[in-house]
Length: 505
Image 1 (cartoon, helix red, strand yellow):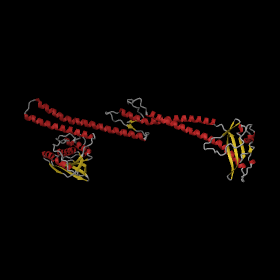
Image 2 (cartoon, rainbow, N blue to C red):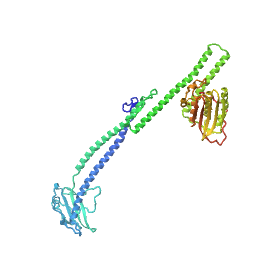
Image 3 (tube, one colour):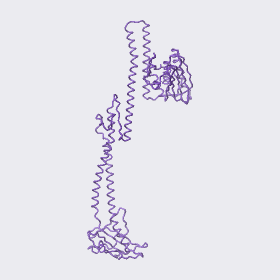
Image 4 (cartoon, rainbow, N blue to C red):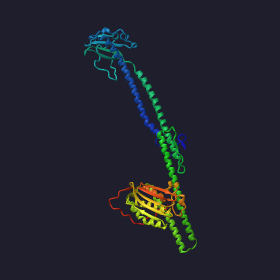
């Protein structure tokens, strides 16, 4: 087993150096987006700080105006100017160290009723009328300013109303606070934080990419080391692996299991095929060599030729079965048509009956009008091999062949009174080149492909091959296929050509 955490990446992979790695693609894709998002968030934070400072500056003037209004506006709508404390330091002095607030109160005719002492102390002309009356501050405050003696003041004008009537105005002004230095410091700190976050997040993305790629490199290493002669390596999934990584590793291991099974089956198939072909070829070569050693009579040559014909027939049937199995294994789509299964079996009665009579067996055939969708030649070959197998392994008794319809399925049933099949051999029935120990003791020729071909033909027709056997009493094989309704047009007459010999197993 190969641990995902203990192997290095293979060096033999042929990949173009111009192709970007997953980590580089991830960083070049996420990096700009991440930088843009962080810069955007930084701008939002800086803008929020700017708005907060602006609002704070405006709220100072609003609080001052609220206090003055509460002090001078009487319940009867009159103005009591002396109600406010005009002697406060920020009203008396204009020095920057006391953060002066310049206050004026006007009547409804814009005539000054009272001004703070710091206004009188200014050596320059100060506005003697309200500067702005009806312009409220927006949700993003923009300080309205006025230049007075080299000073930049921002101001607020508050109308004084009673019962819907304007009875005066309050004008409050204050020097624009120098908060740009604070905003600059905040911006620099924010920029540094963005750079640190950007670098940290890139490192995190790079680490995450490496964590994702690490098991992929291990899987690549396993795939790079595997050959057809060494398919037993597997990828070990650690407990720390992600669900997707574990799923990929398990799927890859399942693929290796299937490949190993396929290669083992191919090796077994090749060895068995070579053996089955070598044996008759060796026999043929031996008889030819014996026949050529000295002159023989015509009868002796004729006997040798009959033997050669029999052995060549076995070879031909084996090769034909291999070709048919190969064609079916490729998954080629069958060209199908409605086939009368009962009529097909009846047309094979002559050939199988003569074979049974040669061994002194009793053969009975019963058919029904059952139709299936299939390829007639392949179905005929399956029936031939099934009956041939029954006759081959039955020394005395009967062979019964029937075609019936049961529960929407067409069933071809072949029952014999032969030697039967041992229970431990039943799972291997239909395996290629497989012959049980009892079957190997008989004198009949066979390649072990007959039932394998039957099973493969039945599977290609979406059917099932069933077997039930009792050793010493006999065996019953059933070909179960989906049945169809008889076609409206008359059955197509099948050609009366000579049937191909079955594949003896």
